[in-house]
Length: 207
Image 1: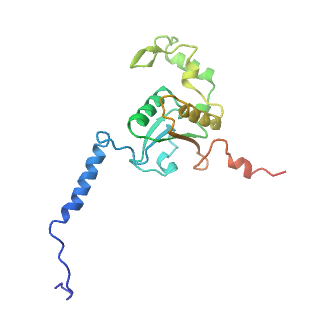
Image 2 (image 1 turned 30 degrees about the horizontal axis):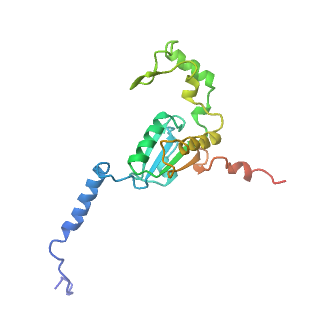
Image 3 (image 1 turned 90 degrees about the vertical axis):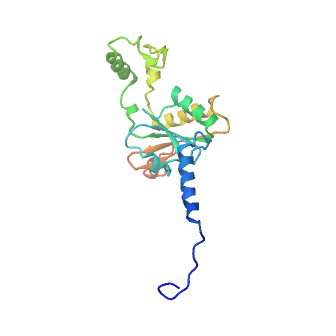
């Protein structure tokens, strides 16, 4: 009998260990998920700009464990993005890639010429000895390739669509991988599809 005069069933002996074991197994899976072949929870890779104003998780509605996130200046599909995307889609069961670019991107704030001049000055006026990839010293920057290597942006919507195209058509990314791109508006705090600038349509009179 209980203190209140009601009978109650005694818990079955040895039941507590089940919940503890479940927690231990979950922690083990989390720590060993690559060794165990466990993909991200959403089987997702996100390629995004490194800009501090983009809340990638909140914008996409994802949580820790849902996705691998690759961030660089401009959210550009560079050789290292392809390297990472190829590895995760081929070996980590990733089936979806989402590109996130954004308005007011720093990659739109200067001309190619200004960037080339600035980097040339930073290198002491000689770019021939600068390694494009320090792990592969044979890949050097020269004046002819520097602007393309930096890849400044003229139109963020066009740039976003281009990044999707580069990933979607690359031979190292499986054909069944889905690739989508979005532009994050720092002024509104929301995502949009590239080319769909809602503010331009809702604030323009229909003739």
